[in-house]
Image (cartoon, rainbow, N blue to C red; front, top):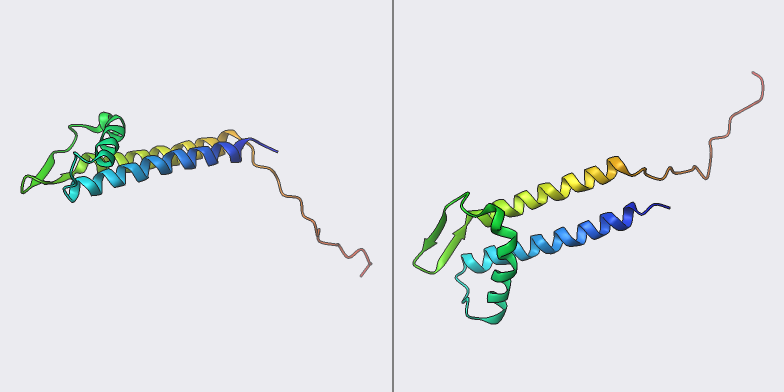
Length: 113
């Protein structure tokens, strides 16, 4: 038994949470959510740390002084998705996968022809 499945599961959960939070941030900004509401404010604060490496890469477009299109958030989602794929591939390369044993091995015909 290996620890690989547990590590992959933890990585799955962490990157899923990151992706969901960033998608929520993108949607709330796009639809002009009120940042004064507790949940919206909390989500913006939590995801600000995740977006810090990507700030300034792309311009942020604002429509009617309320609706914000953050391309940096979309790029962050893509970058974190790529990081997830690389981590899982690295885990696959570094940890051996258990070999399956055949429960029904093919029987060979030993009778002479």
